[in-house]
Length: 328
Image (cartoon, rainbow, N blue to C red; front, side, top):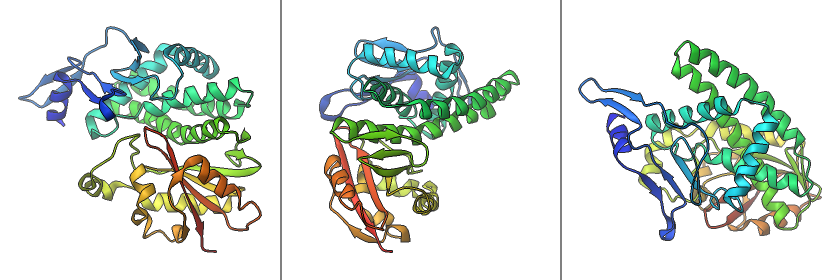
């Protein structure tokens, strides 16, 4: 971990598919490091909160190109963020500081949570987009308010006691919840933009052209637009909670829905071997295709008693889907 922090303290990192920078991390000189004792501390930032650098929007040194998070412009994101904070009814500085601290801590500890804030930004943009086209987002806002209120209160309590681990774990809980909700709004926004009729709800999570969707998020770390080498995938495989995913699909089969949609990595969508030991995924697998086509395929089975599974992902260059018709 110490070597990772030293690198972060000296170098800026960026994600550049096709030579275009979409995401970068800049934590240069943010740490105080004692290499002899292995001691690390985070310097207090000169300015807390959302920052704009040209076409990039940043929080805590994590900077995203506006297009990467699905926004039409920097201005639209800033408008969306202001609306989001007002809807949550939280103290903006406290909330943004909590997000910054948690994102940096988990990047330092596990080194792979570089997209921890991506889902927050993308969710905010998607919700505002849906709201602006007349879709009722009040149910999702109500869920968010309830979740953040409890976790932020506990965060502040542990922070006062200088228990950083417990404090940030509460915001981490909120961010994990955000990840799942972000998958719902991403699918809803995509479907709406491609001519489908969309409604948000709670049970099921959303309705597309009259069919109920329960949306799940794979526990395994999700990398937007990043192709992970197989060697790294295998190295982390032991910590990927496949049994949790299996339970979620099983739960989905018992929920009021027609289609169980699962937000996954591109490599998993294309390689069904990842799911080979899960009985819930045994059945007929369609080929990967553009997500709008997969939605049309899934909806064409409206009168089937089989609950379809839709795997979907954002590749960074577009959206893919894949349908599975499970065995009864």
